Length: 363
Image 1 (spheres, rainbow, N blue to C red):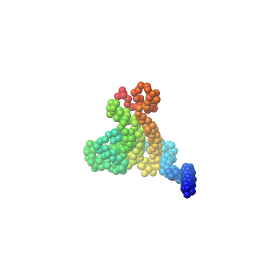
Image 2 (cartoon, rainbow, N blue to C red):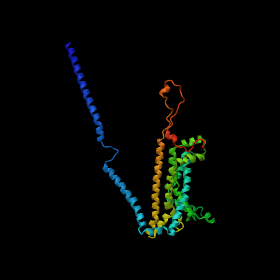
Image 3 (cartoon, helix red, strand yellow):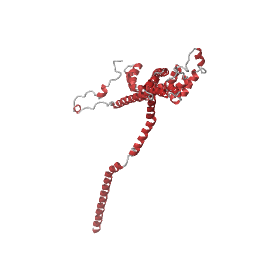
Image 4 (spheres, rainbow, N blue to C red):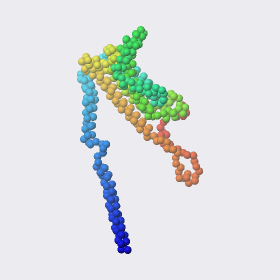
């Protein structure tokens, strides 16, 4: 009995020691867990940078913008107004300068609408339909981005020049394309036609075909679907592409320089006229005409920011529209024994108040 009681006493002591050890371990674990948030708070965020690095990177970026954007832009206006406002406006009123301005505006007025029509048609076909040759068409749209503008101008010279493929036929019919306005327009169209399409294709692909299919179910024709569903959804992206296309058309130099012939007062656009004045050491007049292009760039930037703001606002509003939530759950009163009613559906008030471009009865 004494031996058994001693063994029981040892077991009790060992159990007590184990309990003490477990309590100590639990207290240590709780203490470490409590200290973990503090350690995490003290540990630096691996994503963020120290303040010194952030200020250094910001300063480098601002210095780069000042040296390569603000200073050259300010120099253009300073040189343009260096001899006073009277000389500035006299330089712009020069007959050759006025001819260059008119030709530039006329070229943009022809090229931009044609590229608008092509961009809408190409983006609608690529984003909304599946057809053979779709990948080839997408690749051809990007061709002007990969070909030098000078090379594109030489292509038109080889095709429509006096020694080109169609040169003898054009000469027999008294039609001149190279070293004339038609060649300038063709070269401008070639280098600017991707801008509208490249802005609309990803936008239309992101929107999908759900609204067009719904309009088709309601009985809308293809023209009605395009005019009242597709076009309103891409209007700001379309404006964005037109702004970029117009800026490139009015500022194009390489391709136009090859096909124009530099005939002063006839085939000189604004960039070519600036080059001629600068080569003649007429710096103030050259910078006066260049200031118009700089003002165009600033206006283009402002319109671009406006279009981007409206595009982001429309995308945010589209994401905020709630999806269909299914039938409404039955209330407690109905479950208490009232006769069953047909299932109702949730309709979001904001979504219901939004005007849809197509409604049944308007088709």
